[in-house]
Length: 360
Ligand SMILES: C[S@@+](CC[C@H](N)C(=O)[O-])C[C@H]1O[C@@H](n2cnc3c(N)ncnc32)[C@H](O)[C@@H]1O
Image (cartoon, rainbow, N blue to C red; front, side):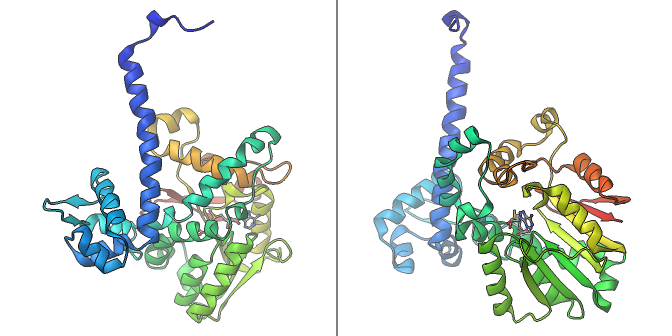
């Protein structure tokens, strides 16, 4: 039975259409941000100050007509400022988000795997039927690069100077010489930042993504760091010998097909007085709370279907926690289940992540 046409509120239809069209706008403008990042246009705008499309074309060697259309769209989207007479400017604040790779607020890097992330949409209807998701490497090499560029600003600016000193006794151990693991290390940015800062300590990164491990090895060689090594967790797993002083997991427990096994392995690997620093997605415990309090919930559930839950369901029987699934109550319960007895939450400056200091 269809809806009675008399029950339809035309104003609500209009608002619904505007809302849906807004998401199409967001998707298309996201594609334009991808192009701006990929072709170095934001950096060129940052360097140039107010420019016309002709001047930007001369600076970048790109075709003026294409740049003009792109600039018009960026101005219409409120990403760059139009000051009349054909002049466009990237504000210093927007440059921190779109151009400056060393800024904590840099986000454009997170768009670099957009085509690959969207390409998996072709394969996901099959996952909805079979239940089986796709591993992280389904995004190809760009997937590992996209995650690296999205998460690196926090590691480069906050991990060593801000976060580690807030953990009980960890910095003293690192300075004296400690054994450290980063599980789900991805492209290794966090591990290499710590290894550079603490030359007396030894650092081991574990991951199952071949693309991420290749990037990690390449970054290690480039950085000249000698006290770090990377391991394929599939054949060279974290040893369960209570030998590690400090273990970290950054944004990866919720992606894992068997997080309970990995949490138990971390417990077995840590010394009795060791520390595990967990960073995971800041989310509420229930859908109701996420709908009411979490403005990023729609984005996060979308990321989940595209990547996080998909990866966590990529093996038969996968836990499928998903992007918002390793929230604080779940983290408390799963770590306690594995034998951890101490759990403290930290709020380091990061709108995406919650941080937990967990000890045996
Ligand atoms: C969102 S990425 C985060 C990577 C990295 N920690 C960072 O912050 O850049 C999640 C990572 O978890 C890895 N991963 C998933 N399951 C894993 C497992 N069982 N053992 C080790 N790594 C795993 C994925 O391959 C991926 O590199």
